[in-house]
Length: 84
Image (cartoon, rainbow, N blue to C red; front, side, top):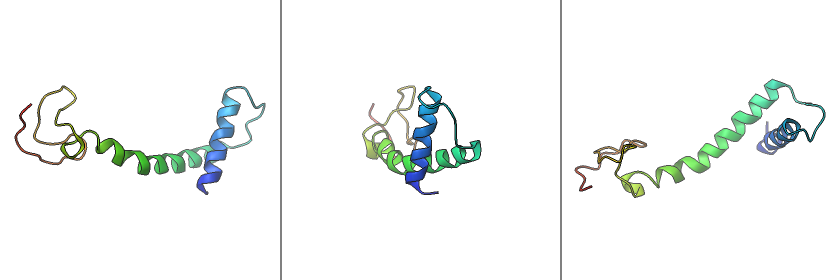
């Protein structure tokens, strides 16, 4: 399935879910395939951006508890002793 088709299926599903369409014309298997395709594309675009905003190479050396750590919780890079 092409990305364009997957997006069209998801848009149609959303319109159906919101009551803008009377009938769901796609079977669950097609919806699942469309979701998988779109999610994989989104991950390719966003994961590097997210990682680049939270690890030492990405501006933060804190864990979720805001405690200094030696390893990035996202990419597991060791960046040594912190001064936080």
